[in-house]
Image 1 (cartoon, one colour):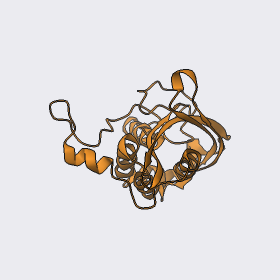
Image 2 (cartoon, helix red, strand yellow; image 1 turned 90 degrees about the vertical axis):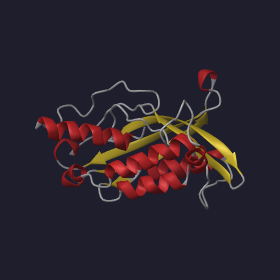
Image 3 (tube, rainbow, N blue to C red; image 1 turned 30 degrees about the horizontal axis):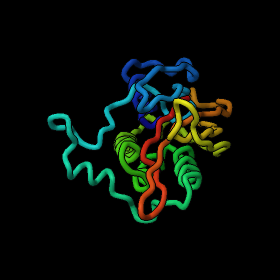
Image 4 (cartoon, rainbow, N blue to C red; image 1 turned 30 degrees about the vertical axis):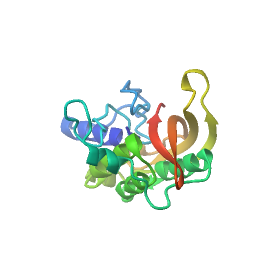
Amino acid sequence: MSRLLLLAALMTAVVVSGCGLTDPYTTRHTSPAVTRATSATTRARSPVINADPAPEHDGTIPTQARNAADRVGAGAGEPTPQAAIARYATLEINWTAGTVAQRQQQLAGLSIGQARAQALQAAASFRNDTTLKHSQVANTGQVIAIAQGQGQQHGSWIVVTRETTTGRGDYQGLPPTDHVTYTQLTHTPTGWVISQWSPQS
């Protein structure tokens, strides 16, 4: 799931416990659908909530929900996988506390399937997140590499980004960090779109 949802979970735990973040570089092992080392610096990382587009019934997703998750937004497609990944990643890693929910909504419009469900869930989670705003958290970054996966990652693409998170308190003075994401794409009539987005570190 998106690193932003992970940040929400982390921030909630801090508020409940009454403690500040103690180690923004601590790594958490989470489910493969979402994982990113929990550097509070960038994209909020911690255990994920189920990102299915809709509740399953007898092991299947309702047809209407499945169709909605697979409907391609206007202007979402790109002519090459690399262009689709670069566009999506650039939006994903550049946000402020005030724009993060809107940014996730944009990502939902550029994706289908798991990636869309994940972005919609992140948008809902961050829409009323006062903790992020109080800490004035912002994330900026750039894509530094995009490559096709080999071996066990055949069929996936790998994107590496370099990011810096700023803010008050524990977010102040954090150094730039490199992050790896596995992604999958689908070719649609409008072009290539992201169908799965799985942060790894």
